[in-house]
Structure formats: structure tokens, C-alpha cells
Length: 233
Image (cartoon, rainbow, N blue to C red; front, top):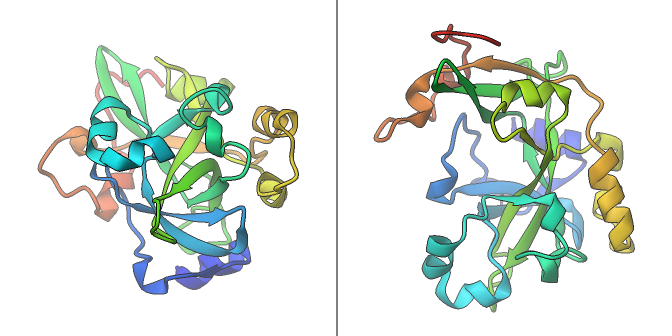
């Protein structure tokens, strides 16, 4: 898996021993994700999930109690918590799938979303979220990050059918452009608006264990399709 990631993204891991493939991680455990930064476009770094602005780094726990930054609304990229880093600390967040909630019959059912591919043994293609990151003060390479979200397209409106949002999954032809330090604000916003991947996503319901506490869901079964009750989609 490690060599496949490096080959696909034309990048090498800065800390290979810190890369461990996984099936599910809760954002509220603030695990490491793998990112590619603007200032090192051919290197993959581990970054803690959950963006922290410079003014929040003096009291990280206090910041996290007040703000949930696992996802950042792209509409507020330049005028919200991420204002100071929107111009020069964009990143790619590497993935091969993600989970979204689907509401049906009065119940929230987790769905696993992925891009089918015959190029990888597990049948799931690699992709990158548009993200933003920051670096803990006086600690080089101690990074944190968040993925950007946007209004859902027709497919994801059926999946995430309450809030109708989706992560910004960039077209692979635009990876380098997203990391381009010379982009102006209007160019960045244009990329977000029109740069979503043209590859087809699929989604299927998975075990409700995903929403249960004290269960180890970092197992293969958590991405396997299950027949949910009262399935409407």
C-alpha cells in the first residue's frame, strides 16, 4: 500500500514508519492523516486531524472544546478560522474512501463512499481532499489539518441527505494547481467550485457499529456493505 500511495501521488513519505493503513478512524481521537503541503509538493507528511489556527495553539484542548475543525466549510476559507492560512497553507489530504451519514426511516445510517478502480487490489481508487493545514509553533513538521467541504452535488445529496454537504475531492489533474503558491483568492475559490473529480463515486451502507462507542471499528468489516433497515436509497 505504501508504494502504491507514493507512486500514485508521485511523492515520498517523510516519515515512512508513521504511515499505517486503516479502515476507520474517529476524528475526535485526532489521529494522523497523510498530507502533501504547498511548500513540499513531493513529500507526504503525517498531520493531526483538526486544524488549529496560530492563536489556538497556546491552549489546544481549550480550542478543541470550543471549535470543531475536523471539516472546514469552503465558503468560509478566507473569512473564518482559516483566514490566516488560506493563501499559503493549502494541502492535499490523501484517502481512498470516507463515511457519510444517511437519514432514512428516522435513523442515521453510515455510508461508505469510494471511487471504484481496477488499478488497485482492493478495488478502491486513491484520491485527495482539498485541505488546509497549520504547523505548531516552534515544532517543525508537527502539523494539523482539515478537509474542506462544499454544497453536495446530485449524488451526494442522496447520500448526505440532511445537511447535503460533501468533502471537496479534487480532480487529480488539479493537484499541482491546488498547491500552487501563486494562486489568487478568486482562483482558489474557482478551483473549489469547479475542481471536483470527474470520477464516479459509489456509496453503500455499512455497519451501525461506526456510530457506537467502545467498539474497535478499524477492521475490514466496517467498510463492507450491509443491508440496512428501512432502506430508501
